Image (cartoon, rainbow, N blue to C red):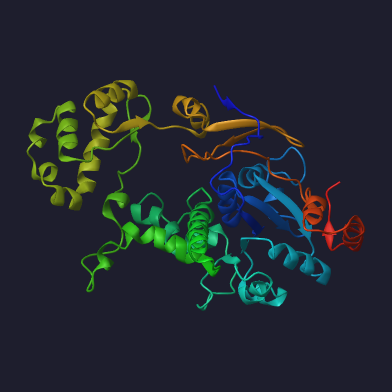
Length: 410
């Protein structure tokens, strides 16, 4: 049963009182700022007249409110500014004077052209944290190149892994927005670090989170492998991850995942499999040797698993304390009893989109829980309210809207 909650919790999150101006789009930046919004931060999403491109990503009930957009932009308000107009830029600078964080995902050249670099914003707000969430480090030769998830998967080596494992003849993308979401986590960590620094020192700073470097760092934790050493002690690529038989195993009636990991677990597995000759085999008992020949052991597992049904294997493996679980489809994840009982999925009524289901924040805090206070906004839904709070008069707001510098949702 899904946990159904209304998006009107009043418990203050740990970041309550923090104001973030969010000029990011797609998933990279919005995923990061949504996490901070879940923790109580006030996030003002500043969009172009065309809006965040993910608004158009299907499926959707209404134009501009696509499913991925809804899942990456809750707990935010939307104001539309046409930054090509000086009046809109003036509005942004006025908002920046009241903000703690300014985060954007535009390329360096575009930011300089708009006059929204750190040095310029610092003149409006000495304590502002200015975060650039872009494709490549600004001091490298790729700085002004466009970057999207597929591009960064290819550049970081992620797309090469299935070929190295022998699963595909050619490089292949991971079928998830891997680079955007991974780099988004880096943005959230970077901003929290800068916020702690500001609390301690009273000083803001410029922060840079490049997607390429973030995902390359993420991939190379294990896959730098032999190249960790100079000179190299073997090839790159973590061999356990790249073993061809490291995959869900076919049983007599389906598939399960099983991972004997320790010496005890490997010996227990071969006991269950009726292979006593393997119990004292050095490939099982010697952890260093086992690491070098892990592909051979996984191949044995693949040969053994079809001898029983999935249910029989899962019961026996659980009794032997060997890690094993079913292989879920996406639909199975939605119906998973553990996720249901932990309240992982939340439902709420969105003002324009009706009943919405979303994964809740997986983070748990005993004193400052993450909350869903507001669904993802329509394009320009909060323009008037944000301007009013910034001190603009009704006449000034009307003039900004009439000029097109600001747009307000109908």
